[in-house]
Image (tube, rainbow, N blue to C red):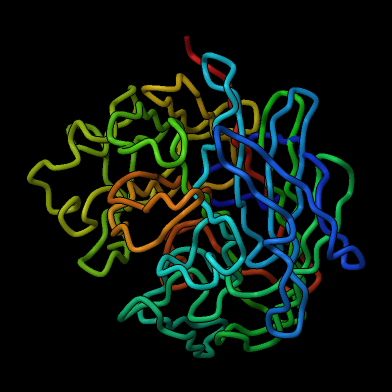
Length: 388
């Protein structure tokens, strides 16, 4: 695990058991079906050739009947079924019924593995050892989540390790999207028998580069298609957050959350203060900010969210120093998700465990540089239970 500077330690939840399903490269006709409410995800709907590589759906299950489905197109979480307070399996992740839904979506990051650099880099420009690099610009005027063809757009190599674990690997070639070094990436998604979804990341490089990997699941703990997330109860163990400019690039300062709408040190609903007259909320169109996590390790959750209708509680554990909390501000009902339900405004949220945005240009932030001979290694975990 990477140990990061100035007493900011990283935490993550262990996690997740999965239901072996679908998709060896030699069995394209195999079908596995996952049911939640009337939702049905079929492996054959994820069988397609994209950029000369075969896509699949992998189904994971733990001993409690919790089910996750993962596609190797973009390393995406397609669905995550956990029991609500009445024991009913509820899909808490937004996704599509087939791979083409993800391909055509106006929102490129649903459920995706994010890289080579999660979040934003100002103007896509950074230096390593005094040498200038320019990544592609896809969030004017900045780079977001790896650029125009980030990891969400590629077909990973995938294989089931066991019935609750899938391994995804990808070679990001030297200067792909402007990033130096051939980067070998491995991501392991798994379900544990304590109902945790676990994300483990590893990477090595042959040139000095920058790396910041995460997963961009969009959650609604009342269930996909259940409406607003504004009444979800949120707690984040962070005394500071990173204020941003109008382009959502950190100013470089750490600000106290106390006395601001960003104070989630005690449980608050997402919607309680989201429309306050606050320049940071206006620039972000709501919450779209990195929280500087207090000292933590994998034994302590750094964030907790509770669905107001379902009673589903999600605890977040990570080894990362930051958490990007996003309140679905750019959702515009442009995409038909599972069962044809539209992705309406603020009907999901994201909690992306990560290093800080624009770290390559902000030397006071924890470093995201990776050198040849070193291994990038980090983990995060989302643990599910119920509050009755």
